[in-house]
Length: 501
Image (cartoon, rainbow, N blue to C red; front, side, top):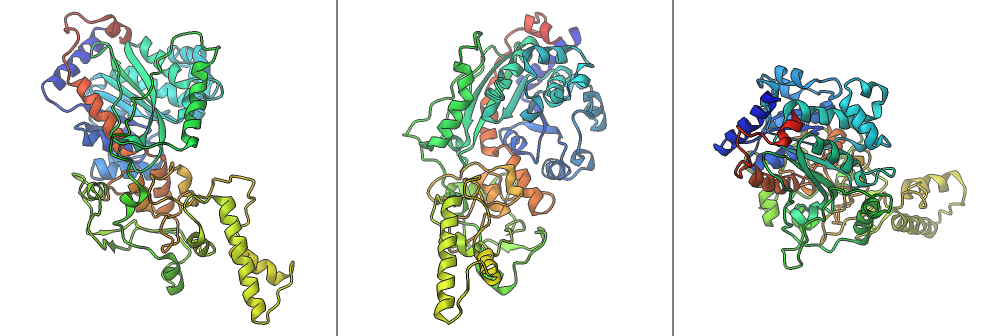
């Protein structure tokens, strides 16, 4: 008890003395949260990430490729003591000031408050409920490292996941350990990210540091499409339900004003990047089937055209290289002409109709040349397969979408690693899905940020990431609390400290 109390107050004292808060990023991915916190003045001391490519990316960008930091680690098998020993970070309770991360919510489905508390309080209980591993290990890291602040990021469904409010359950456990917690839903587009991405954000401060939690004010304005408001309503429905009869830690997000600068659009984010004419590359043979490696430089064609583009090329410590190595696209020869024909906002049903028209026009052209193609013939089927996508329009209608140039992009998902049809470039002349570097721009990763692996792993890392500019807004706001005056003296530890101990 006394040692934890002392560690808490030593951390507060060192930050008050001007030293940078030290961050441990759990479920770190390639480092979206880490990048935002580093930009806000934090030191990214370590990370835990299971995926080898993402772990390699994190180590490459934040620890100059140091093998110890680029190593993939399984949080369920990596004890806090072992982590600090491997990285030579000193005593466990003194190693970090802030813990951040986004544990996957799927592993925690239907565990519930009583079970969560049971698992948290009994060290061996998790063996009987493996679904709870990831959240419980996150909370155990909090127990071991006694941070001054905690950030948890997740999807909005964390507020209503199979009828349970995971965010509230985490908050209650953290509050039992002496933290004050609040959570809300923030959309990245309100914070300068050229993407409409809704996320649950939970912030907790140790009771000796603060007794209040607030969230950053928006810097940009957008009237979100109905789908995003619908997602938010579903997530919040559980909080309004009659079965919730106790207090909760949710607070509404800070309101954005129409007087703020408009949200960053796709064209403002991508317009200065080198043009990639997919049909031209296909015709010349320069675009072929196979893994896309980051081994071909593509120089910039023009200077940054917007403040956002300039930021992406001048981000401190991640300045743009002379030429991009990861501005690479998928090989989709059947669909390039279809992409050119689609209108902004078109989804798969509209794309399918365009393809059917193209198919009928092709048959008519052949007929004009005297080549009659009989329906259901082998030739008919072959021509149709070369033009018309085979997917049922009744299933996953929003799997395809052509972007608007004058709006932020829709949410990027990890599924980018599979096909990228959810983000077809707005420029019909280029007629393609977005490149790895364009996906990174839409997430607000600067051009000097490098992704380990080939194209598919890079897309997956980007889709899974927290947008760095959103993370920076949160981190900058949290820094103000961390720099404030200590609530109580080290000689008079609060009840909150005792609870943590």
